[in-house]
Image 1 (cartoon, rainbow, N blue to C red):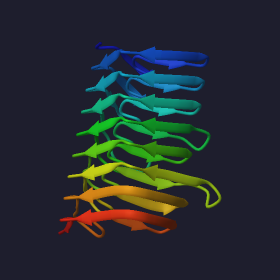
Image 2: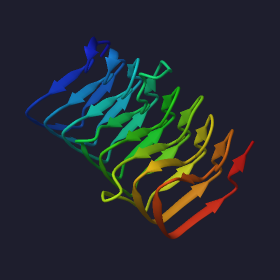
Image 3: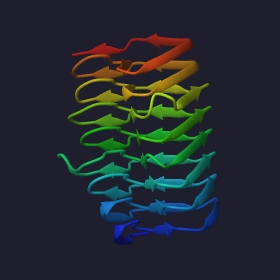
Amino acid sequence: DDNSALFGGGLTNFGMINMLESTLEDNEANNQAGAILNNGTLIIEDSTLTDNTAELAGGAIENNGELTISGSELTLNTVELEGDDVEGGGAILNNEDGILIITDTTFFNNLARTIGGAIANFGELDISESTFDANLTEREDGGAIYMDTDDDLLIVIRDSTFTSNRAGRNGGVMYIEAGTLEMTDCELNQNHANGNAAGMFINGTASLINVNARENTEQ
């Protein structure tokens, strides 16, 4: 707890780590990756990452390697600043070379001033059986998730719930700048955008199968 660094306030990984039943709390990075900077292989199970802060990106985690998260909670993580150099991702920044797999995990009340209240994704992403609740971007896009990837890279989200996420501009649940999404068996309820698309703002390509949206609002 209460660790501080330029990158990776709590942990920097260039090897292989299995993290089980652990807590990373109140860590801070003056640049990116409030709690963890992952450049290797990292498996997080049944763990909690809370109240971690980065100034520019990845309030809890910045991932450039292979990251698997299951049965965990990421709550109250924050990217503090805004501006041209800020990459966002209140809980996680997944960079272009990153592989991010998320299962049975809750993202609650994470904050980015710019993009991706919970996740800013520029790499490979697979989400299943997870919950995104009350995540927020204050000024820009993607209340829960911001996505900007190559068109030939398929992003998969299934069996997940998005509730009460808010975007300062567009895409209360998700903003897709570019890329291909397949979303199956998901619920999008009571999300909000101050601009357009309280649910999903799509500039790329999306396949939506049994996706239900209820009581989402735009200002």
